[in-house]
Image 1: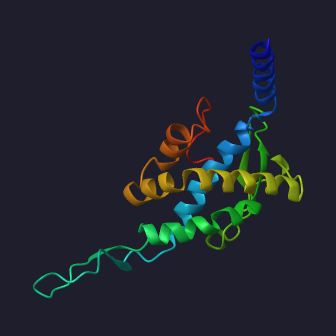
Image 2: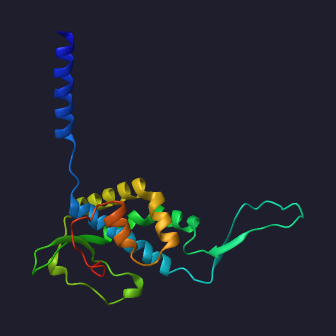
Length: 185
């Protein structure tokens, strides 16, 4: 009799857990993932490609020489870690965009960067939800960065092409099943 009660209790708890687990908003998380890639690519492009950083063990060899390796600063793990710490702060520059033809929703950057002076998007198709909208995007960004930080760093350190597809479609699965063009952000 006691085992029967325990089984019923476990079954009820498993049903309760399944129903209380929230489903992630695919538009929000896919857009956040794509925005992370866009912001990191922009930040990397702003770094002088001639700058390098010494990496390695910094140990002396038996002959007294030091072996270290110089890598480009822009795609070094150190720099990428620093960029990841601040990437979600720029999510306030994004808002929900509804395509007037297809009615497809996604978060897009509405605020021009300093190098894009005068290149303003059409604000008629953006829905500004106030701080709640950007806070939701920032939370999604922080969740993605926390969960996939090592994957993000390794992708950006090694690859320059198709990072958005690999991170958002293959690694995180946030954009799986959706079709976005790479130039939409």
